[in-house]
Amino acid sequence: MVRLDRIEFVKLLVSVFAGIFGGNIARNYFGDQIAGLFVTVVVLVVCYGALDFVDRRYIHRETK
Image 1 (cartoon, one colour):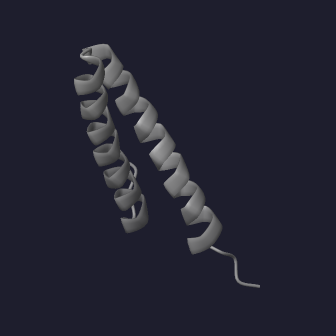
Image 2: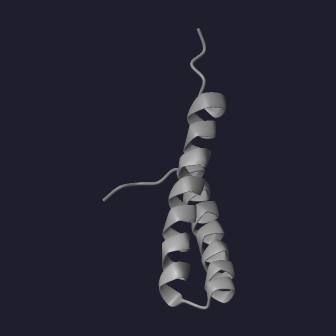
């Protein structure tokens, strides 16, 4: 089983909520369940990728 540290848990939690929020907006705008699901997955992946980039770039800097 994989253990998540606090940073990973927060990244995942924020990404999931952003995906749900984006999916609900898309479902209401387009009136289609498939569009909402597609936008949910896309927003989740993009948001997690952006948070992971920021985490690796600025938070976990290697001190020399």
